[in-house]
Image (tube, rainbow, N blue to C red; front, side):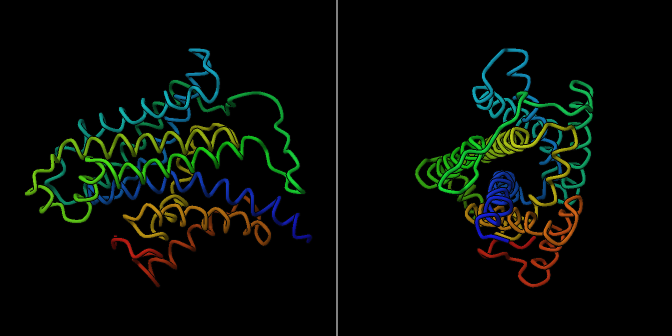
Length: 290
């Protein structure tokens, strides 16, 4: 196999899908850092965000990219609402109860998507997107847009966490919840902000997954395992770890089709998850232990 062929057919697709996993993994790591529980509805929230973006294009007639901010805001508000309605009264109970409850929320969200949009495959736009030649590299414009937007979102989030008052409050809650509360951090506002950001990142990951492939009501469930694998591989609680983990999982998945049928490439995510939990539970960047 020629090196340029390897890059075009395995490395580039792996980086693109890995960047999408990274967005979801960041949301997972934020939720665990602040709330200390896994969120199994994360994938289906990504699905809802993707279909809300579709609604922006079909109902309101917005251009495809103009519907992304709408989907991010709407999904963020949905995530805050879900927390207020279902998770808030479980915070004083063992965290495993909230984790189990999130599976029920996932089923509710998926059913809602299927009721409104059905179970048929949808597309944001019709037609074939052909790759452009960049000095031998075959890259689609949508792939460049995906990577550029993911980069902007990640850099913006890191700047928000490092420079703003509420970003520092979120970091304080992640490091030492009790000390942060004693220091005057408003717990309710930090939790609401965390869910809004997490929901928005879900919407972005679902949108870019849908625009690079296709929209399906089960798409979020299918990316849940690789997204969790990415978060755990990088180190739960580490934003940079989630990005690195997402890229690694995405590339490994694409490389795995050289040896196994593409229908089974999710096995590679499961293998990564098992290896990390056995060998290095804190992940590459020494995050929190699940």
